[in-house]
Image (cartoon, rainbow over all chains, first blue to last red; front, side, top):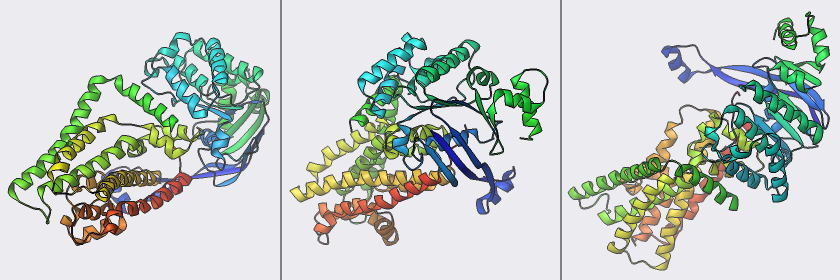
Length: 266
Length: 259
């Protein structure tokens, strides 16, 4: 179970005007701007749930994910995931989670994917039997086969993303965080990834938290949506609730979300 | 440790993908070190001694610093590249894996081309150890080993410090190179050559003299050098504590980068 209570996080960002004179001035006195990335964010996710975490760029989605993964320490508030505080019990916590950052790779660039998988197995100390079983199942479902022998740098984005997902599931995590897993993928790969995530959630009862800008992801996958804007949770409910909140005619989720962003001025 | 070997093999596999690139950078590293060696030889073509040290003695000093530095670069290159690791999100990835963070940064990069420098240092050792007038007693051999090992660790500590600072700022870190690459460059001469002030700084603030000047006096059997000089490199390891503390502090303040 995941519980967040009043999580607050502020970043200190130095800023200056453009130009050489201002750059010189910044050498001696810096102006800082405090950015309130998250402000009193609270929600609970039960085991086996699949939640879509949405919001416009800069709303604080990635920051929340990073806090839940133990990468960032919040300024204030509590977070408990399966009874642990991520940033205090980092190593025990990350054993139970899998993370896919859509825009970042976790594979070693110049070696065949299978070599990366084996190193990941050793990093997580996954027993060989568990590893082989997972690898066999996952490669079958995602149709990886020969791709595993190719260096990661030569893969297409769609192929690579499927490998990324396998890499983060080899150690049987109870929770999977997906940060924009379908970004930049073609239609076929997108559907393959979506189907796979759905199957994972149903068959293995893996809790999935998914951030995305693609409303089709949300429509295909999640029953529950958490909408975040300006660092605050603005809506926590189903897609139907979101649509009715948005007061748009028609059934288009994309338009509903856009209208909602506008209405809430986020 | 066995995991480190696995990382080692994956890096080796990666670098072997680009054979000629690997060969040329190794050669380049060798040549860079060779130029430094030449400059020492030119200096001694004009002067018999520098700051009271003979040609052989300076060469010994050169080989010690060079080997300590190249070992630390070979093993702990990840810290040297740390700002990049933060910038490209590699550090976030390290944080979501169930292993010690310092270990993962250490293993994130290995630069085998540094073998070029190490090779050079070894060649100089082969030349200078028999030709110098040093009587190689057991304590002296131990001191020499300590100088290289503790020297490597001290350079490693400086790199950890460098990494710690890059948690706070990603700019203006060049001055740290003064202490790592700079020390390696200037460390070819015993630090006493640079005057009393610098020697004091390198004794009490950044204890590079503890792995170079003082134990060197012991190796050379100078009158003023006692056993305390011989074990000075071990004392220098105290410097690792504040380096580690700074890194821990930086980790707490870590802000990550946007995705």
